[in-house]
Image (cartoon, rainbow, N blue to C red):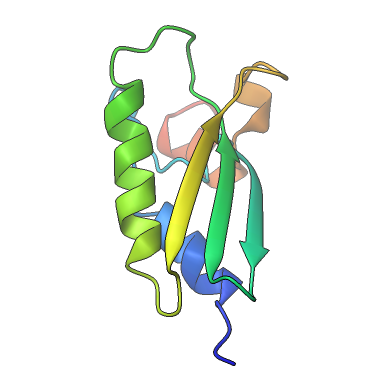
Length: 103
């Protein structure tokens, strides 16, 4: 049985950017969990946004779903949005902080 490559899923997520901050959603710390169901070929993504009520939430979630479904052996992708725990800049990678001039 063909397996979903988690590194390829993460690479696909790194191609998705927050519409207000020029950093990908992985480095921003917006992705909380990636669940691979190898038997079904399904990927579940639990993520958040930098702000509750972000008017671009639907577009961000749609882009995540579209890019992940392009990964080999992925049949479906479901994106769940959560605000628990709330996002904070502490979740950002060091690379993201450098890119934004925070370090």
